[in-house]
Length: 268
Length: 293
Image (cartoon, rainbow over all chains, first blue to last red; front, side, top):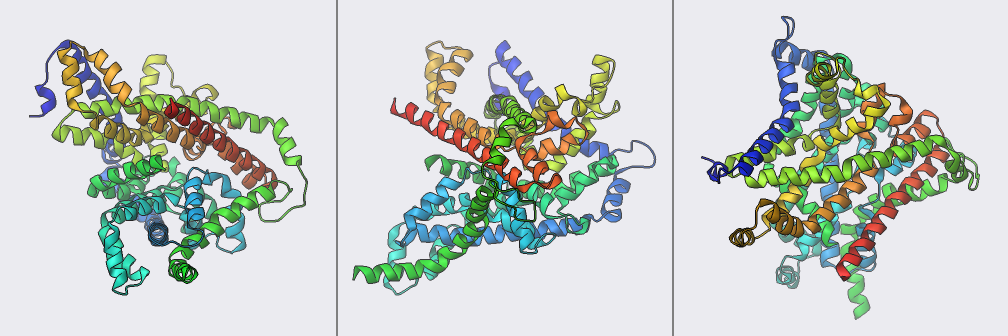
């Protein structure tokens, strides 16, 4: 029995219940309807297996998935690698220009990356990376928020741990790899998940950087086959399926990471 | 001695900091400066142009297309930021009232759309509305006698995209509000109830008052986010009269990639940059005034 039902049954409470129910149904409806519309046998020629089989085997969905996995995975790995090391250095090492770097990172998280599309395109064109995985990855590596989160977490680790290792002759990169990173696997996992989901869902840059259909990310390519009716819808749902699975598997981590990234911004 | 220590620290920090700094310099600082420089030229997308001084900015002032894009963007911001925040607060309160399984289910229902890629969301929206056989199309037909093609009507387009956007992204605000609601001590409500405060009074004087800081945070994030809107507007706009559906980022895209005028597009981008910056500065000032009170 849910606790919610055990409350007072006055008229106001009842009204609130009805409103809540309506809102939940309203929010769930589009996705349920879409799944139902692609699965239900609207007429004899369609049906779940036919529709999804068609999408899987008669389009390049496999290739598009591969592009999405490689580029989103690449973005995630590189962002985590460069942000965790940079966050560690800012948190633990007194190097020249540290404050300047920190304020530069803090100041840049609100800047609209979308304003840079023209110059990103020019740059990637000059480097000959249009229509390549690397070309899709590079401009997505600007993620100051990951450095900010890492720095705050490394700050909160007791100084003595690092200092003890330091006196034993350990180098900074060893302390980072053996103490600071392992103590923050949870943060790394949470950040990796939201960076991956963000890169998977990215539209504008992957859409600009790629013109060859075989190099498109799944989220870009399905926008082109939207007009195919139910098959298009099925493809659209397939494009979203991996991130929904990730969300359902790591629900707590995802919500944690989302609130985390904002809370850190708020302090800054 | 001190110098030596400094040098040692610098040598230790360099390999750790360098990858990030390189990426940042090459893909953020350099393109930003280049954007500024290009905005004073008549360059094309893949070709550097000649210096034209302030001509691009003068053109900006009298460009109807830019004016329309700016107005559409502000209209979209007005339709999404405050309404989206209020809906987020309402949904968070729905989730907060529930317990156990029901709470987890309701939170997932509100949050899952936010996880979906924009093209999935717009595909669903299309098929949900576009024909008399679709659920919303059918509803409109029953109410109106005829289906309204909301995506190709100048008047309906932005409000429809706003509804779509709120449905899609509200989960984010719900999470933040939920964290705020959970931080309110339960005994405040109990005490208020003992004093005879009704539901409305509790909402007004406890919930609303204590959620103010989070509300401001959500509003700020929404504002910064919605000014840069592109994806869903672009994806839904393929059928619509373009003037009423062009937002600023969309305008940058069409000037640069369809008209091949990178110089002018950069000037539009600088304008977008400044508008966002103005909002951020304004918001920080407001926060400072509020804090100093």
